[in-house]
Image (tube, rainbow, N blue to C red; front, side, top):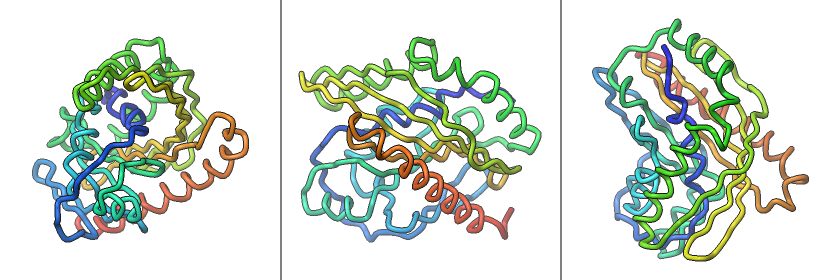
Amino acid sequence: MKLNQSTLLVAAIIAVFGVAAQAQQNEVAKTTTLQLGDKVIVIPNPEGYEEGSSQFKQVKDRFVATESPQADFLLAHLLASECKSLRDGGPLVLTRYTKISVSKELRGRSFFNSDMTAAIEDFRKNGGAILDPDGPTMKEVMEKAERGLTDLASTPVGINLGQSQNLGEFDVRPEVYSVMLLFTYNIDSGGTQTTVPMLAGMTFLKVRHRLLFVNTYLKISSLAALKTELKPGIAEVKQFTTKWINEILAANRESQ
């Protein structure tokens, strides 16, 4: 089954803008239930995180605005400390966060092991072209993100993607395919320019015969810090991603 890979890659651009967000006063749930066609999937919060898009309208609006046209945004988890700061009226400062989305085309369709194998083979074959900042996929992603963020900010937002790097696969199983990516973005928002290096753990996850795009992110503090922060950052994202993926699979294991 051939997939539009922009649905996997688009989330990494949503990383960098401080934005005041008012909390919706709901009790924080430890899990979220997703209805995808006739399947119900349970997503536990990662340890130390809360699901943020259900609590903060501005958080949800930001992720939805930058989502690929081929995908539906489902969930975003933020650090619990960041959610507390938002509830206290502080700004949104994304340094570690997650996003889960699903292909619109596959949202209600069964996804089998053979489909997973084909998706992995397609990514291995075409991943370099997909990640090319001058290629059509990433250009489309950047243009969509610029429009969405400009609308939210009511001021022009420009995003220039530098060369992306695939740092390799780190979890490959029949129901899991995880790769580590490094992105660098130059952001111009209202005349203020920022360079953002971002590590992204990107996962195809087959759970209850549905395909989820599970993405985990760690912002590198600066380009100057990349040399010292990259290696421990990769280790952190790998460990965090694999642990959470295992928790998601365990939460749905009995009903597989």
